[in-house]
Length: 177
Image (cartoon, rainbow, N blue to C red; front, top):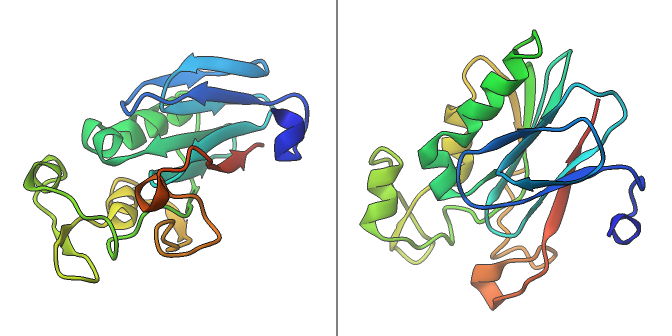
């Protein structure tokens, strides 16, 4: 798969489960089931694959983390768990990047999702209930410099979106130190 992504042959990735599990990684290959990977090893790229869920890459001076943050993971605290894992390396995250995912413009959901994310509702472009996963991920990164792509995988045609067309294809976000 590394050759397909055009990155180094030595890299690590996870089988995402829509939860809050964080795996510490020191070697390349599949790290198992998790929604976040953390490493302090220089030169080891970590990959997260997403379609409509939010990819988050966090960086500290001592380590890097990649996070798969769908609404279930955000509600369960996967971002906080990844921040704690970074802090365990001796340094809190300083910067984070939030990549393309489904935007509040297109993320039509039910009230259970709004409740799970603290009641913070948004509205889709056509007037139905939505949540803003980008803002929720950023809210969970206090005191961290955050860059956001703010690109919707559903309505921006260059991205893969399961909700738009049922594709099994994904974007890959990579972080390394």
